Amino acid sequence: MAEGRMKLLGYVSAAAFALVLAACQSSGTAIPPAPEGNTPSPADVIAASKPEEWRTLDPENTLYMDFPNGRVIIEMAPEFSPKHVANVKALSREGFFVNGAVTRVQDNFVTQWAQAADPARPPKVGVEKLNAEFTLPRNAPLQFDVLPDPDTFAPEVGFINGFYAARDKERVWLTHCYGMVGVGRENDENSGGGTELYVVIGQSPRALDRLLTMLGRVVQGMEIMSAFPRGTGEVGFYKTPGEYQHYADIKVASDVPSAQRTNLETMRTDSASFKTLVNSRRWRKDDFYTKPVGRIGLCNITVPVRAAK
Amino acid sequence: MAEGRMKLLGYVSAAAFALVLAACQSSGTAIPPAPEGNTPSPADVIAASKPEEWRTLDPENTLYMDFPNGRVIIEMAPEFSPKHVANVKALSREGFFVNGAVTRVQDNFVTQWAQAADPARPPKVGVEKLNAEFTLPRNAPLQFDVLPDPDTFAPEVGFINGFYAARDKERVWLTHCYGMVGVGRENDENSGGGTELYVVIGQSPRALDRLLTMLGRVVQGMEIMSAFPRGTGEVGFYKTPGEYQHYADIKVASDVPSAQRTNLETMRTDSASFKTLVNSRRWRKDDFYTKPVGRIGLCNITVPVRAAK
Image (cartoon, rainbow over the protein chains, first blue to last red):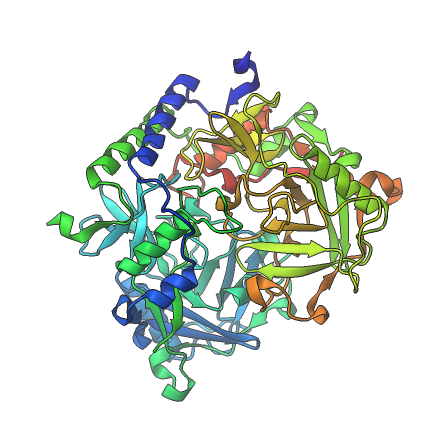
């Protein structure tokens, strides 16, 4: 008997579950079938996009972290964490991050960095602790571009101005997708400030959503942040300072001479081209992907970034 | 007006979407509230588990891949890909994998390896191509332990004997979660055989489900497979053989002398302790995770593995 083979983890009855599944799947029926023929590649969509479908990163809200093997660039999200963004800029400007280092790489979770001077210096202008900036009211004046498929963790997911986001009836927040940067803290929700930062590597740990202040996203250099040796100490901390992965500094782009800047632009997530991109990945069909899924997950989407034109 | 701020990517009307969301969310109401107090950690659950809730890995279906910095261990899934598993074993036994190498590391996607002898040797006993083993009929005699929350890509997801899996009304398949190992192929669905293998690193690329033959899962050494330098060639291939990351060989564990084996056991995914583990992560509550989510994604669950007792 089929029932003998199926065992439900958790507490939903099989009947209730089937009902919910059927309802969830009905979202599929509301969506038109796959486009005919092969779907365009991201490169195709980018090539066909218009200049006004891109926005240049604001140097005042962009951070550079220069490692020996390349520059990591972070776009900050002051709409969501204005106090933390301001504090990180203040910390940068007082030299707090000079000769900092990655101190923790926990496989399939996060890479974390901090001021690594030994002994640690307390900040002078910036502060160590700020009140949490986890979520905003749902009615915050931000355009939310909703994705069509069910998400495991939130009622609605999509993009706000290039950032992975989610919302429910009351609140809106940035989500822990690959490449998102958050503010480390201790158990106290108000114990973070920006002296410890982390980026998501591996499968997105969405259970962290709404529990951490999100500072922004990595727009260049994730292949650096994701490939450091994993730490062998507890939760991935390096056991010895000799393992630390040093960067020269964390600088606000606007504080860097023009000639040394990396000027980037990102595709607007409220643009027609981005909608085309999402749909072409959702229904991806080419010589290799022969059976389109017609589904796409929030954290499986990459927002295009390129050199500013 | 709220409508002005909300723009739906794709083609579902907002009303239809809200309806589906409400239905999907009703699965939440069928599930009891968070357990009282803090949830046990995985270590707590493992400590409280019974010996019969674990199974020892079968050396006949286990592969060792020894890198200079450690051993990577793969548990194969002959229930799903019997011909590919048999072929990989034949390839191993004829020495096909000796002095092989990782040749591709595409960030946030896959690490791929292969026989890297230069020039490449054709197999003698094993073969280069087999017919695809992508899915099984849903009524295959395999216990499927279903998870309670909605999944973006499949109607039902859960575990089959320790492997991440999904099914619909007709078919059942293994899914591309972090650490899952698949069989590389060309565009032809029947062009893979096991002479090229890959493992998922980064956010799970679930759009690959049902398009590739899955060989098994990494049960030890993911921190090695995920931390190689990313390739700078097309789709992450290393541009020069000098960049290749060599392993000594890929050996079937049963072909390795007992004294050199790594004997592992894995928690049975049909056990009460695994159910407790999933539920404790789903409702995770402790001094840091203060607001339980009551949701968990398939690829966010790690199946415990430990030294065999």
